[in-house]
Length: 331
Image (cartoon, one colour):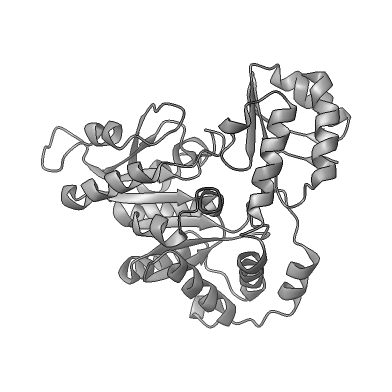
């Protein structure tokens, strides 16, 4: 079976499993798990922030991150196809009382001016004030697109004087950094809060890390506890995170190269592939997915006419060859 549905389907490697088995553990709710503590310090340092907190999922990281910079009755502004408003079950409203409003971008590409023009000010009792802007990098529903650094810098510079926070959904920020050459610390300094995922392309079985200022992370720990995310001897998972950072970041370039190769061989312009996602548009998605599954290739349906293929560490060159062998005739 060649599974191209997502980079979340990866299984821990033998080396990662060994690191997990040998992990030193403690009670993380008491801040006594040494590997969790060191992982939080490590990720905070990578992104140039004061502190971090380990959370079970990217959704929890995103939602807590937005709550830290937005109060109930205020709004988060973002892209209409953003993960935080598309795939997180309305959590901002359902749990935190946050309003969300979206703008339709061109292909998911961040346009700072477009967002800035839509910001609603504080102090006008007719309007819901915009407290934060959410940015996704890479952009999932835009096919793994890497956001332009100049636009990120423009948005963040404007936000300092405007009193509007920036939250980064950095679920695949590792892919963005490898593809663009932009350091993680640069991306980190352009956000007030950022959630970064270890369980996608990096291959850890679970876990994300939320980074921010020390004061905000102290508050984040309260929200994590309230949401049921207070974990105990979780060093076994933090060990997987450390292993992923040691061994699986630079190799993302291999996934990107395989994605471009896959795209070209399926008739998609490889220049449209920024990272590890290939989008096939204008297809009969349900029929294609079912037919491919019958031949041992799993793909993800985005809509009735669009499918998504993701490369990851569990798909090698032979897997790409097999996917092409199955999908090309079907297309």
